[in-house]
Amino acid sequence: MGRRPDLEGILLVAPGFGLLLVFVYWPLVYNLWLSLHDWNLVRPQAEFVGLANYQALLQDPLFSQLLRQSLLYMGLAALGNFLLPLGLALLTLQVGGRWAEFYQSLLFAPTVVAVSVAALVWLYLYLPAAGPLAKLAGMVGIEAPNFLSDPRYALLSVSLVANWKFLGFHYLIALAALKSLPREVLEAARVDGAEGWVFLLKVLFPLLGPTLLFLFLSALASGLEYAFVPIDVMTQGGPFGHTSNLLYAVYQEAFRFFRSGVAAAQAALLTLGLGLIILGQLHMMGRKHA
Image (cartoon, rainbow, N blue to C red; front, top):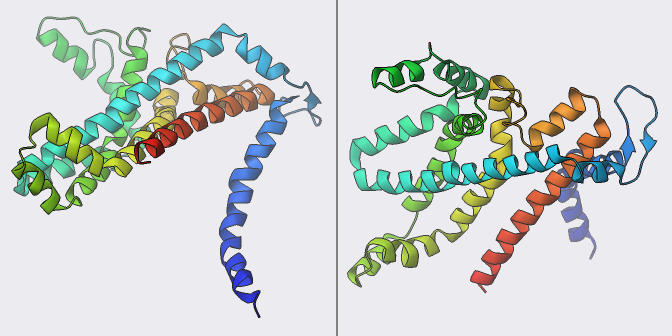
């Protein structure tokens, strides 16, 4: 009888753990195994090559370019899906009334649009010469750049689409967190003379600590994922690979070039990098609250 509560707990946890085992842990283990092999999805047998796939990637200049571009995508995602939603949420609270509800609906609207549809709309907006942005630039007497074919602007243009599409989700999280803060604490801080940047840095941001951490980690971890569909629809990694990133490169290596071992090695390095970033942020947050 003394073991029954433990058995009941195991039975309650078992379904969830089973799903994690099948859909998370086993794919991770299989991906690591595959990264040590040379396989093209066609041959019946995978050839064991050890760390050769990793060595080839680390010596490949294209992989270094993909790494830089991936970090740039993540940095732009931190701006567009962390700082900007937080700032817009703060401004929305200052407006109040029906205008606040209008702005909430307006900012959240892109989130309900399918990513592929949003990418096609922006593909039309970016059209050289005939696109609305090019025509608008011509009206003011300037020449619009080739947003998607010029390496100087292509990555930024694709990232803009991804950030615009998912801005509303992060905005609503920030807005809900701000609305849930205890009013008495905020009013007491203002009575004590906390205003402007002092109020934000010393009162508001510490109270929002867990939410800010979630938003920041979500923006970083999802930055490459958010850009995947816009890249595939708008540029397919071009021009000359300047809009690709590690996540899209994994897809290309596996399902276009059929180099599954190389794709698995890229996926393993990407997972390791994201894991280290998240662990670093959690460690810093733990030290701050220690």
